Length: 308
Image (cartoon, rainbow, N blue to C red; front, side):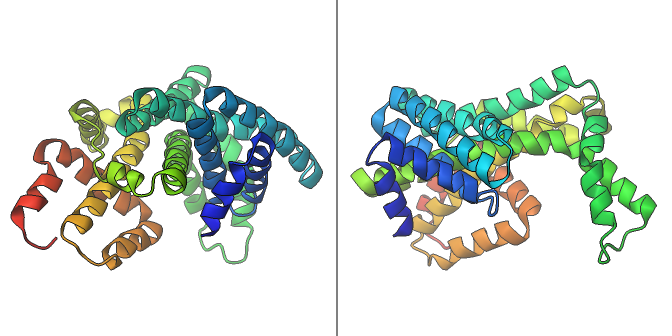
């Protein structure tokens, strides 16, 4: 109910949408998941009011958020960072949905933006791992000084090196995930306000296609071999593709629960496991999404007439 109130308020005009987005983004500094709601507002306004109004809302949000950021933390540049990593990507993905009317193509657009982030970082930073190690050093040093930190200096350095090697892919996957969740929230709000039930049916039918699935499968195989270490820019694309096919895996789970008329406790269990076992669950769901391109698990579930 609260989410519907937020969406209804944002739909009352440009400045109300901008204020809602800016406040949610500011609160996300304290509670990061709220940033997905702010992206959802941008997606909703763009879908409902059109591309030009979407741009107007983003510009108005930039002004409001910059004032808030300047007042709260004294750092105006945060507004530009949020614009590039959050609001602009979700706007572009929303445009893809608006013009193609294809939820699958909009998600693939999000993955394309994530891969673009990977390529840009590798283009402008010759050794991304070393760069991230320098960027993370103050954080790691502060963490290692905490009384509860149990690793010695050598182990801490190994953790820092491992994390620095993953950061490019994780950042790109984060940009992709924010755009995907933003458009999911925006599309769900649009459905709830103007066409109840439409998004649920759309989401359960999601299928991304064989070509992206083959690409993802090849990345997984490379990651399991020594070849992967020789092409770090390609390996950094893997987290992005796992995110997008993980979403397809969730769509399959939702569809199968509906087909089999199972309790929603199944879905609750999946989301709880996502929180406490995120890497493992993303891999499982992404594998499910990849395999579905050939095995059509939802149709098989309809024909089997048995439980999940």
